[in-house]
Length: 311
Image (cartoon, rainbow, N blue to C red; front, top):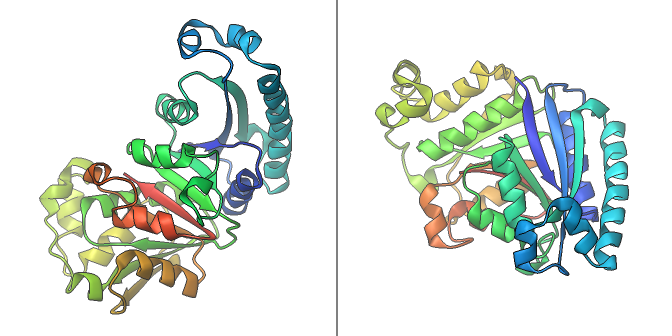
């Protein structure tokens, strides 16, 4: 099945890091397509004008400095396409567009991700010494806060490892994250997945009620794979296997160490050289404010790692 990834780029080295991450992870896989999107703020046109002007009219209304940005971004798109091609992505898998933003950059990115029915939205970012140093100013922060219906891939720094760390806790959103990962990694010849569980944080294995999962995976599958004593590990593994991911590249890691789940996840990623952390995010996390849930705290503290957040 074809997969579509939307990549928000701005021509910075952080966008280039994100492209290299994609190339290393998905080279020689023809069933995945990438849409590189660059949005230029139209600062010289009033907000009312942006609502009724066509894109062609908006191009004539913007300032010379904005027009220069458009030219620069179009040039960067050629370089970005060349980067992906050199990393093993075929040209027909790459699509690019440079546009004037009409609703504001983060809102336009989210709108495109939803309207285009993309399987994930990727954004790169700077190091997290300061929150405001996320790529494109506050764009990443706004997307993280507002976009809970499209999986988000956040790339921090240079990520080279093909190893995935997936914290599991027996909840619906945890298994949904696995479901997304299983779909994306189908046919990937190099990726490794480690399912991670901490007894120190959650005590004995949680009790799983299969009925809570019927809506997405169906009664038959849930009763077969979520009634077992080892369902905390077995069900995620089975989702991966059902999507064609080889069992010999699925591992289980259980630990008793640590008291802060976000720090423990990041510590494990550092120790064992995981390149990507995949986490579910509860819908109610949106009401807690940015960076208050475990997944958001991981995002805040993460460096030189990719974080996939599935809401």
